[in-house]
Length: 184
Image 1 (cartoon, rainbow, N blue to C red):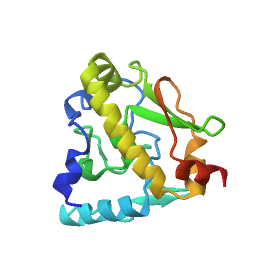
Image 2: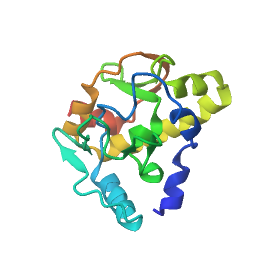
Image 3: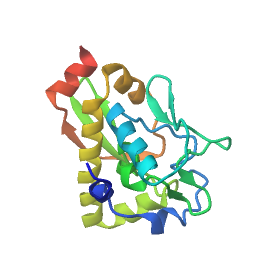
Image 4: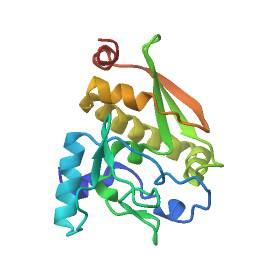
């Protein structure tokens, strides 16, 4: 997949995110999952853009971008508050401020949006119904692709993470294959 095509995965929200004044930061103390496929795409992008970021990933229960000494994502530019790998960034980064949880008992995936008090972008997206609808469609596509590529153990580890300050906006029936991954 070309980097230009990858860049069309979401709207460019830099104008909102770069002015964010909340103490919470999407790029601070967060560990977005990175599949082996996404890792290859990011590494190819770093090489093509001649960005000398050595060993940018950490692996615990799943792989994610390393954090710097201040707890920021290694791909976060503190001066511009922009993502250095925006066109190819992890799926959950593209999905933000939308997030998800899975209710295994009901077989449903629940979609949430962060509250505006912790994410100015959430306020922007929520107030514009058409933008919210389009962004939720994009978030769903990204998250479902991510979940299909994760192992059962990685997905279970991610689902343990708390997503505070969110509210549910929608839910869908989870694909049987993904549900089997979690219950099998």
